[in-house]
Length: 88
Image 1 (cartoon, one colour):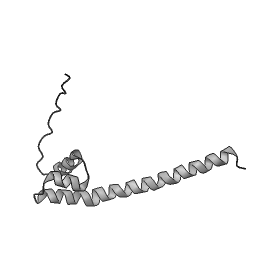
Image 2: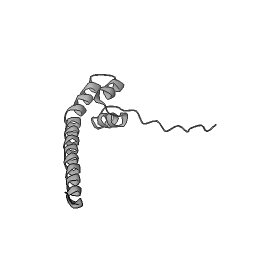
Image 3: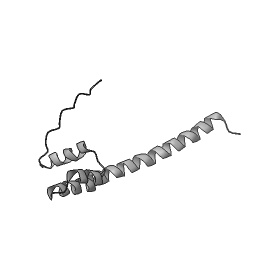
Image 4: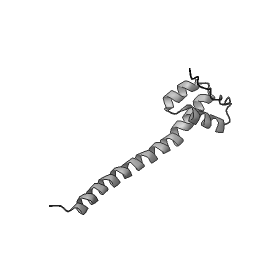
């Protein structure tokens, strides 16, 4: 027979273990993003690759890609203003 506190402690250990694994994977993903994907994406843009294709292959959003390109000194057109939605 287990007491509620032991069951809660076991459940919390499971949450902590899963959370620690997730944090480690996210840290690894960030290292890959900044250390490998970012320089490769910038280089691809420098040699003339299509920016939409770079974004698709890098699996990043347009804001992230254009941030990288701008920081690398590559020309980036200004963001278009949001269009108003029609309500009809």
